[in-house]
Image (cartoon, rainbow, N blue to C red; front, side, top):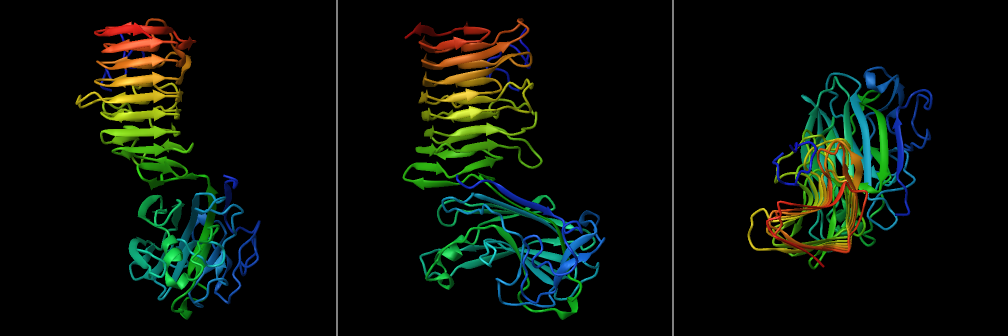
Length: 503
């Protein structure tokens, strides 16, 4: 008997750049690296104005250790370059050539006392080290706690059009605890498409844009209208001074900065009916290719991750209409939870469902629930199917590479007509937890399967079979010129129900 965890199980049958990444921190302000007094000039920090700031001895919050950076609103200014700046990353982030596309900054913030400090405020911004802010949080001490405001920018363009700053009150912080603020920014080529995510104590509180369009179009930025790279954090005291906060105010600690080559949102540029992936990225949801469009991966990678509090389901990339193409894309997964999903929501890398088109020159690898060793009957690297059974879409699956898939390298299923040629399909090799199949044509599908290299699909013990090429109740299959190696069985023709021949 074939089991759900391991056997000759038909997929879908049983419903079960030049810059380098850079980091700084965590900066803890402890005595091993910092002296009490002004932070200016200490380990890359600067604060050249007459602001009420400095490294102080404090044991108010356990996570802050014995020293922290203190800053108040006793002295404020309309200036920027003399305010308090963190060290700068050697490899900045931004959307210009040579810059890394992702910037991440985390800091912990608390107050020096439990009660309200009237007029206390502080702004925190990712910056270039001299005042070119790309995002913005403002902390205001009010009667019921410290309010956190987030501002992003919209500008309808062209150059000379005033920008609109959109402000939201996104949280109220308890003064008796320290709180973690995090900026996660993805920079994408083109106007108005950067993505800023604000997390507070690990929870996503706001999603918006950077200030890129302010620099591009607002008359205040004329005539240069240029965008500076992002490499540091600006802690700014502007607005109305509150002399009563002198010697008190906010405590800041555990500051970390990072610039990386992988974004946490997937950004695309669109030209005609081609959407081009702009950078490596992660996604916790399915990427849809609009009807009639081509997703051009440009060699970049989309990595599937579990959403907060849940797990990734469905395809990483799929169609949103009657036709779609996917070219030169890399798809993988990272640390997905072991949750076996039923058809049709099961995990797949690239899936065309009821759509004609082409999947060409792509790589799908490491697509699995949990770690290798899991028996979930899903994790098909490339999948062509027709769930609705309407029409007979024609799909070409050509020149792709699939490896470390969970169940099937290339699956053709249902009322579809496919050409599967020139693919390299590589399984795990002998394993005892799942019977993989390299290429599967099943449930009425017709296909020409030729010139593929199919290897290492092998299940042990031999009570069940893994197949290099599995044909199961197919509508008509022509096979020829495939290269097989290391498979338990090279060709399995099971419950044929249709025609089978060579090419």
